[in-house]
Length: 209
Image 1 (spheres, helix red, strand yellow):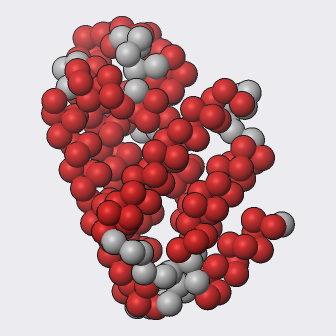
Image 2 (cartoon, rainbow, N blue to C red):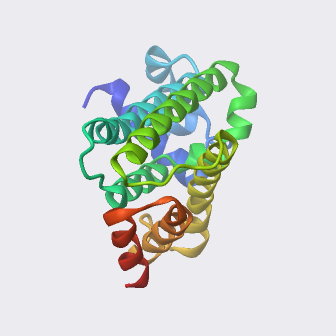
């Protein structure tokens, strides 16, 4: 693993454990057993490290979302359960950012700009998926664009909040299967009124099970 990548991996672990606000570049260097000067050779400050980690978060999220838009465009059966689970896994992997979004964005305007671009991209992908899912008969049309915005925002807020729930309800480095299942069930319940056909049947069976 290259040094730049090793720094990002080490920093991510410390940020998730101790919080990005409290962790310093010296802490990161100490964790990686390198001199601060070596770290600064690759990244000039902690803000730059956080931005690079966020770029990885954004790229990995898009990797999860784009295949769904391709399936939707082809009117192929969507795998919403797996889609929800993969998103929750990413939220956990980068939980420090979701925990400290407001503070980190306030301190770094460049990071805030990246975050807004990321959310805009996800919003567009969500609209693409929704329109094609309605066309394919997997979802029912929402009454207005305001209702769609409301559901979209509610899903994002809920997913972020579940990360805090995991940290308070689970012990250890990995959330338990039970906690993940509870998060997935709640999100599925929010989506259920807007689903139809086989997708709705699958969700109902999972929730009942």
